[in-house]
Image 1: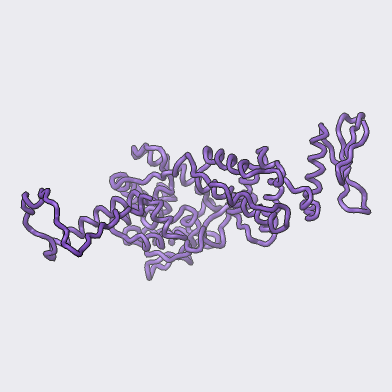
Image 2: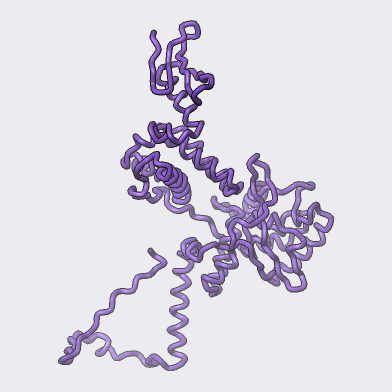
Length: 415
């Protein structure tokens, strides 16, 4: 079989090895590199990948680049500029690993149509939730934006598609009822450290609303017993090797916060300070000198809930944080205050996460306002006469005046 020429790639069949070899010119004047494939198409694809890996802009402007390689290239650029933290590294790596398995991402960006992008995201909506869909959209959009700046593509077609909502709906995190919280609290209050060494982790989450990673990363220097405050300024995280480490910051910028220690758990925080006085790096919670994995605490919580006959599925350590938030709302705490206590980066996260609880709370508050009106004599204390309340007579509009019809008020929480 004679050799075939594709620009800077020459392909020929190697009979002795029963494969196709492709010789690639990476740099003029230097030896050509060879890649292989079981078929001619595979050999050509491997040759193209080798050329793309050189990041030669002139070549990409002529021949384009597979979407997956473009996403990888953009990821590497951001990572080399120290813009990728450990948590984001894992999320983006998941996106890349998924894309590598799809035929869609193997296509050249010059060949992908708007319809291709739309179909891909429509399929994602069947298996991923909104937050994951957003991550895929962000990574691909940024990669295409880079390609447009480099004149590899003319238009960023992703800007024209409709990003679908997940068909899975929002993940609902279980919240303990008041009765369940009472059972769990009484159980934890009556345990000693010898009974369960991590009981104070659960109490801090349940009555202060910390994320499990924030609680497990607490150090003695974060605790101010005199002023009854805890400074949240770091969290446990997973590094790029998959090991649990103490992060240098919280999950979000707003996660760095100072919280008051409630009286109900003050003595237990004080107890933990004493227990951990010899711990490495001043950490409050360790497991035989090592960091505690949140999955371990999760498993232990579920087993203890079963023993307490709280057998519903879906409970986790994050349920403790949600229970704290729910009780705060029921107690009348404004959303903006709760948002700061929880360390949310945006009050909309708080409102959207606890929309059902806020809806119930607003009904309660509306009733309180109505009762207040009565207390200050702004409403009639006697019942409205039946004849007036049920009058069907039309009101005759005065001449020269127009009755303004106010629009119906829409409840923002239900949007």
